[in-house]
Length: 279
Image 1 (cartoon, rainbow, N blue to C red):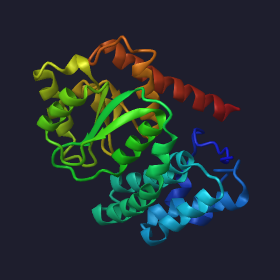
Image 2: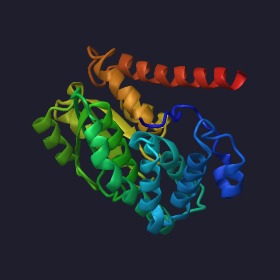
Image 3: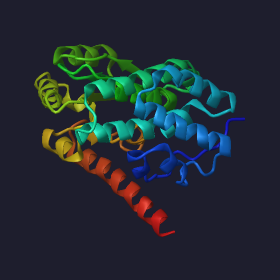
């Protein structure tokens, strides 16, 4: 039976700015057995430090202890790459460091993807995702795609540097419920807006809910360009995607009310975090 380790709990990861001894002193992963807690911290730092040679060994060790693929992705892998993203934003890391960390994630995902796909129990709709034109980074997008697949979506990943016309072709071919634009660089984030403009011009805006994400992307940017939802991480993306095809299934893409409902999901999460902090 897989170990039940809470990855939905909001964690303070300030310790990841320092070193692994600071991480060991936290109560993160406190519901895991001591060897697994240590393994999770080592995996976090493996990703931060870009030590990709040992990544698959760490993943194999975790799997041998019945840690689920979802727990690994949503837990220590997400924490590690979140710190890499923070360092990139703060100019503490540059593209070479980010690419080394991406190699760690690629190695881990290569082992985990078949297991994630095998967990899929139902098909609840199609999602098209891609990194926008001019941007060659896709590690965050791949994590989102895998978590979407595990949640029951069929995911069509268009890859990197995807021009607007390829998104249009994919919408017409696959008829997705959701289209996700990823961008890692501030120099390419505007292509999310340009691609959305083309979707509108082609008369397809109401057919799809548009999600945006990536290191430089924020809720303010989502609001500015008129996207339906901003996803700060893969778990948020899955929660909002599920809401779009269940509770808010009748709302079309571009509906201001749908945008407001997506914001309400964030507000609810923040309220839960505040309640947990007081407790």
